[in-house]
Image (tube, rainbow, N blue to C red; front, side, top):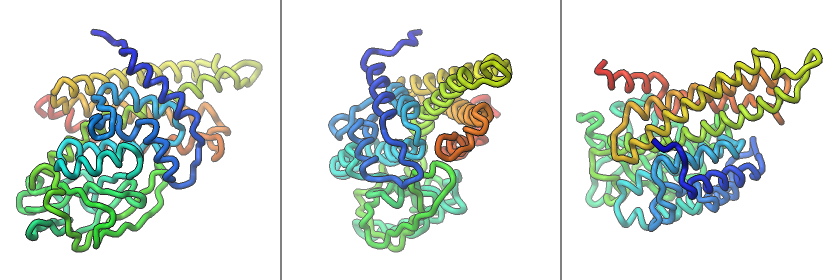
Length: 374
């Protein structure tokens, strides 16, 4: 088994880490189009998009490696999340399941950073449970008419295009869910932004659909395939997006090490205390284990395997070590850690979000248990 990286992947990792580390940290300002185009120019918004649609066509493993570099270099996890939610939960479903006319017109705009994409599946009473969607879509000639309300739609206030999931046959549960590509200027679509404490620079809002007429060729796949398409997009999100959290944890560990070497108390560096040094060592081991779990899941996906249990295990391990690393950094940095200008309290909040979105930790455990027939 070869754990090395081919030269092109390593070069991209080094480039993206170095480039994103130079970006100005503009928190708590909202997402700007300048930031977005910067991500597009770096190739981040189309990394897994095929070359003929404006991307660079990388697979799961190479994409995960590049997104780890993004999280390692960029201190704004809100921007990181916004970019990768755009790519994996909006662009990739269109790439893999969209009508050719839609793919050719929209995906290059998304890959370049000219357009912002958003995924709209969550509802107030239907988060992870796609069988409980209340948003509906009914056929009307060569169009569908969408009605309903979507909540917690990341990027919604800035989005130019939405992937929206609605029920076309409510009596069939998840087999009656259909995915649609809906443009921002569609009559009847409105967005109400709201603020949140985590990933603060990723804009979020409630999307209201009131008689939105969407062309039938904007259906993803075929009617009734929406739940499967959403789960397909989660393969990308639960692996390659969470690779960015490997980067965040690595960046925080590096900061803890530097602080432990420089900060002196009682006449010696605090890194000489086992409480600090062993904490760093333990987290570094857990981080490496999470990384290998995630890489294995990506490799298996690249081999064409379903790999549901491996994806769940990787997502769970990465999200939990991200939270524990950020919490440890808060303790080690002490008073510095809680400052709003140079502290890491926002990193802890951003890491905690990782145990909820893309399926809670409990959902990942359920998936892993199913692999054992439980």
